[in-house]
Length: 242
Image (tube, rainbow, N blue to C red; front, side, top):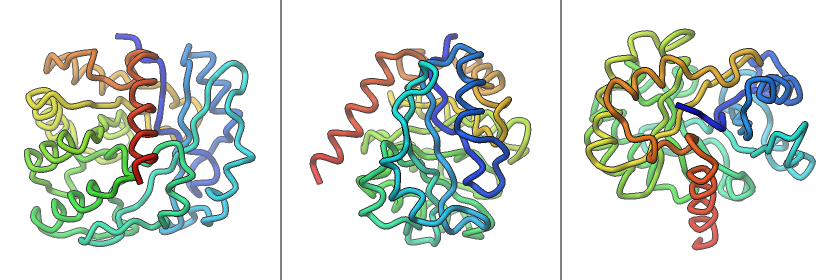
C-alpha cells in the first residue's frame, strides 16, 4: 500500500522533538512522500512552544524541495470537559488540528471520564483528527467514540509509534478501533508521529494492522493525493461554515 503523506510530524519546537522542519522534509523527499504535515505539541506540553509559534504561521513555507507542507498542531485535551489548550482564534489559522490525550497534561480517569473528554473535544468544529486513541493508559468506549467521529466527519489516527516507541500495549486496541471505523464507513489516517527525522514516513506496523483487518484503502486519508485533497477540502468547508 502506498502512502503519500505523513500528517503527524514533530520538530524541535515541540520541546522533545529532535529535528528541524528542513531535516524532516529532506527525509520525506528521500522516502518518496509528496506531502508533510507539521503538527507540533501545544503550550500545555512541558517544553512546548508558545502560542506565538502558531500565530506566526505566515512565515511557514507551502513547499520545500518539492514536498508540499501543511501547518497544523497536536493540541492537548486538558480536562474531562474536552477543553483544548489553544484558543479558537489560533486554531482557525491552522491547516488542520489533531487532538490527543497526554499524561503530562491530563491524567484522565475512568473509561467514562476519558470517553467524555474525547467526545467533547470531537464536538469542536475546528478539530479534524483524533491521535493515538488506542493508548491503553486512557480506556475509551471505542464504539461510542468512533460512531461520533464518523457522524462528525472526523478522522481516526492509526499511529505507528504506538507499536514501537511509545504507548506499548496499544496494538489490540488499535485493531478494535480500526474494525469499528471500517464497520461504520469512517476515515483513518496513518501517521508516524515522528519526533526524529528518520522516523518520518515509517508506517509499517500501522499498515500491517490495517491490512490484517481488511481496511479499505479508499478510506485512508493519506493513501492517495485524491483522498488527501478531499480531506483538506472538507476541513476548509468546516472552517468556512463557522
